[in-house]
Image (cartoon, rainbow, N blue to C red; front, side, top):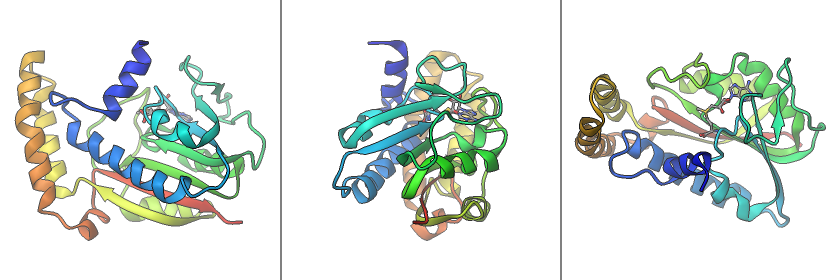
Length: 233
Ligand SMILES: C[S@@+](CC[C@H](N)C(=O)[O-])C[C@H]1O[C@@H](n2cnc3c(N)ncnc32)[C@H](O)[C@@H]1O
């Protein structure tokens, strides 16, 4: 198996020593919920653009529904089917795809308004943007890291591009993300063996602390947000 494919699988199925285990499991569950609700009911197989695809970690979940899966990324990513040009434009026609998938990309994008406008342009009318991005999270350049979103800021930037929000969920409430950041405060100074021990101790605590937060609170204040937004027909 290629290294890139392996990295994708680690994100999809994080092991017990993974320092992002709880957050990654929540992301996968949200992705499964959204695919079940918005993609599975489509009568025809769909065209999906994975915009900022990285190692395409969610491709195995999405591919059963697709007739075409297009990975889009910066020129540095050899896995991508399409590289964005110098202006950030995608070599796809207007109204070409049914879904744009954008997982953990928006915080890394130099110009998020233009990025969302490109997503809007390539989507068919009635097509949907499935997007996850960070609220509170540590600095993690890939290759850069510019933004953190509040729930309201994220809704504003998406709806102002003309999308209608159909689904909005926060993952990891304040106390859970506090624990995650506390772990991260120590983990990068620690040798690898100790990192594994920290993950073993801290990740169950992140899980337990998240149990103390209601979904309505998480929807306002969270470590990561999942949004489904529709291009109006
Ligand atoms: C944290 S990675 C996420 C990768 C993948 N979507 C995932 O969930 O693992 C961020 C990705 O966004 C890409 N990226 C950054 N700026 C971008 C832009 N303007 N347009 C498209 N992709 C971009 C990076 O190259 C990188 O692959």
